[in-house]
Picture 1 (cartoon, rainbow, N blue to C red):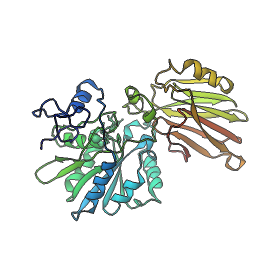
Picture 2: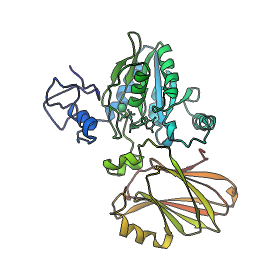
Picture 3: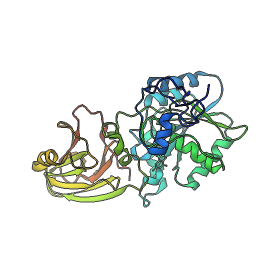
Picture 4: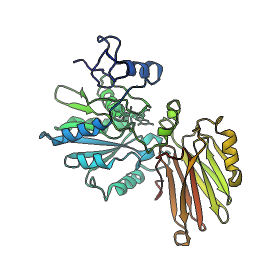
Length: 361
Ligand SMILES: Nc1nc2c(ncn2[C@@H]2O[C@H](COP(=O)(O)OP(=O)(O)OP(=O)(O)O)[C@@H](O)[C@H]2O)c(=O)[nH]1
Ligand SMILES: [Mg+2]
């Protein structure tokens, strides 16, 4: 059976609606991969995501010695963790690979990021796993990974949710070893559709695996053409606003937050620099949204939205927090007075993860 070299699916010529469809079986890439690769557009096909985790479960049961590279994304660390998967791989050798470090502001020390990640995992089932920070964009971050892979005598699997960069990392490792990368990487969820074995040399293979698409990312309720706002290549930018009570900041047409409290407070927003931020009075925010939601870009067009309330009382004055909107970035501030932040996200039934945490930066 011939497989697509982009996504790993078995090629078939019967049904365009099914994955692996190719016009002719002689092709190397299926139609979906061909179109993503050459036109950056997505063919709509039925994808059975439940199978992805089942396949990893099966693999984890077999006797051979295995290393699982568990890839997460630093731009959305908590949102790209998958506890069920952590449980499945925990009986094996696990290396936590924190990808997309290039997105972090240059001024932030790697040691600080490493401490943050270690803290994030310290009470988890993967608390003893080695942590590697990486980016596929810089050779000096990829070479150490190549060396780890070359030395490891186990079967090596790259796992994690969709779009954390599993295929990109494997391609970068191939490049660092002077080989030509062939598997497809893209901003779309579910780029890789089956397990793909990639030989690094006659002794060492890496296995790329499909990741489950995340319902907790704001990308999930955005139009796919706008996903480059969530999956981007330029350092995240910090924008600072000094807000008075009852002022609101819009992230283009994707989300907005209201500040309710006493006095002025500084808010540092970390997001893709291509996203326009707009300040308005909270009393005008719904009006602004109703007038502009169709013309803002990127935007989520819907009449209804969901609110998330975060209360900060006297007890936490002086403490710093991030409020994270999964896939979009975070808002950093110090609590100066008791205050409330209300995060609003279009589509009432959305499942976007919005939460407060200790500051990452
Ligand atoms: N900024 C940045 N983006 C990256 C990096 N690595 C991957 N990406 C981007 O992340 C997106 C997803 O990459 P893929 O390699 O397709 O992700 P995946 O984990 O294989 O996804 P699935 O196959 O769907 O499970 C693409 O837009 C990549 O360009 C990185 O180190 N930095
Ligand atoms: Mg992939």
